[in-house]
Length: 123
Image (cartoon, rainbow, N blue to C red; front, side, top):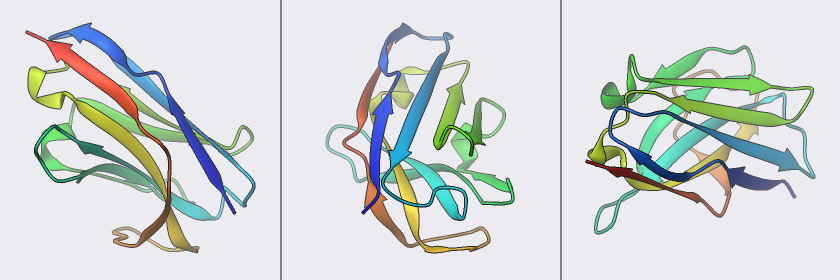
């Protein structure tokens, strides 16, 4: 059973940057699509970005040009570099692993989730 632990959240001013990390343990990391999602207060969880085993990437429209997802298979870690942050980026950010290995993007089925890390962007 894979375990995912996010870190790197915090309070940042608008226009600032944060890098989130998600460390995976207890499972095979490199074969799976890894994704970042977020949930703002009172809203449903939404997709932010994903990266495949072959390092193909996809982003939600609001993240394009500002966020970069990457992975280090040697460290079993996926990252989300967030630049030019806006107050509307405030949310709990979760990482997730696809249910099946060797999938190509887009992937809709994520079966393992972390506990989340809070990002607050002040105006």
